[in-house]
Length: 116
Length: 114
Image 1 (spheres, chains in turn brown, green):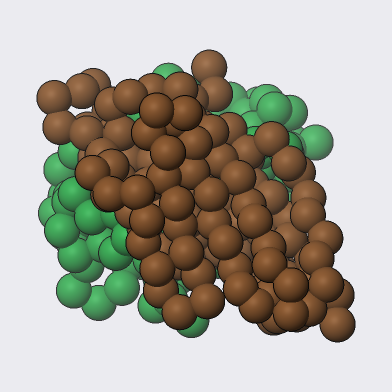
Image 2 (cartoon, each protein chain N blue to C red):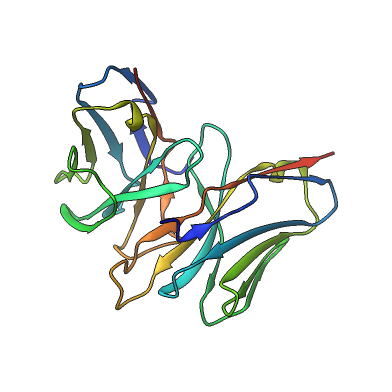
């Protein structure tokens, strides 16, 4: 039962262009959504998050959008840089009142490659 | 460098064996989380400890167990290993028990079961 899904295993983008990574979820009992970035041979690193009561959060070149009605979130990177090449995981935190309170549920990851 | 250390980096063993993975959290962090990343899978939450006590459990198999010691380091014990247990095992730590973005991940231990 995959509650958080990243349907695109990989994405290739030209340097300077926009990268859009997508994530879908099925469980309404999530209160925070997060994006993590992972380089080879390293653990995931937190990138940006968004509360379920918001629809947009921006941090520099990174913006996360949340569409609750569609149970969909996306990460926009503008402009994309070669150093952004990594695996990106979306994750969702269980809300209070649910059996998964506080737990993070991760998607399968999307490999982003930014070409110079 | 996240400040979270995991040993060993690589582990190769045979089916039926038992292994122990070790994690040292960042200085001052009381909470430790264990995750499993299998091929083509996202990170699966296994278990969390906070200040020595089990706080939350995910899809952790009965063959797996963990503990957090008084010095706050944690160990994940995997027994009766099967081929399907081959995966990357990550440890993460945070200051408080319910943090999300404040989870700092270690570099992982790659377990190969032959």
